[in-house]
Image (tube, rainbow, N blue to C red; front, side, top):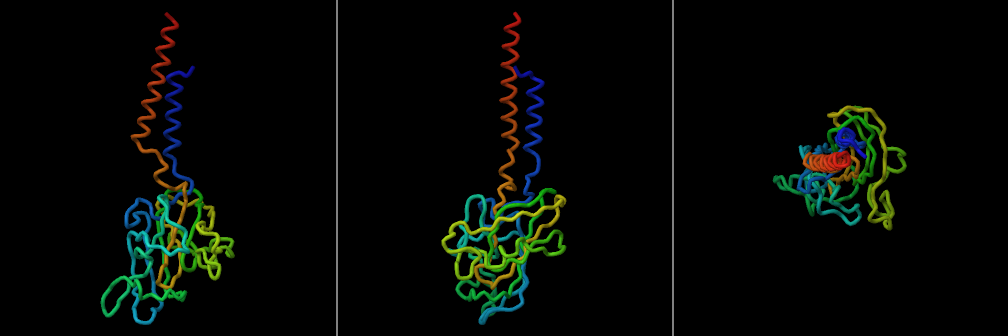
Length: 248
């Protein structure tokens, strides 16, 4: 029979385990269900522009969730969604002197004229592991603005990260599983900036990460923990009453 003290200790251990930082130490892209991702920012640097439009350097403190996605991309889900600079992944641009969405004007020709930096804050010091999809070309990752490291093995990240046999990292018949798994060992610190570096052509560029261990929703809410505590106290009270009854 469990004692009140044993149940109390068990509850305390459970609370500590639930409060421990997630192993992946990072948030999935596109969480929250809104039009913008509060966990990820995006900035971009332009080296050229297609004919008829002018791209400009820019940044967003909250990356836009891409909801109008090409058929060759891994589908969005409730736990992870694509992020970019606009709802369709097209880079904003100047057309006839007006700053606007480039939808319908971007060639999507694969010319790597835009460098993207997708950044988030590390939640702890553990390894980062999960699955990633990208469009156009993957460059690598860095921490706190340090050296850009390639995802390894490099042969798994050297093509466009979508499902299209002709030029994609995945075959057309791999759809809808168009992400590549990765694992990064490290002993980083909570609050450091983790950045993924890509290049694109300005049309339908984006990033998706599924790191289920890092989903903040996986950590129980305080109210949920309180309910668990009340349940354990109820069990403990019943045990005490039964023990008192047998001693009469």
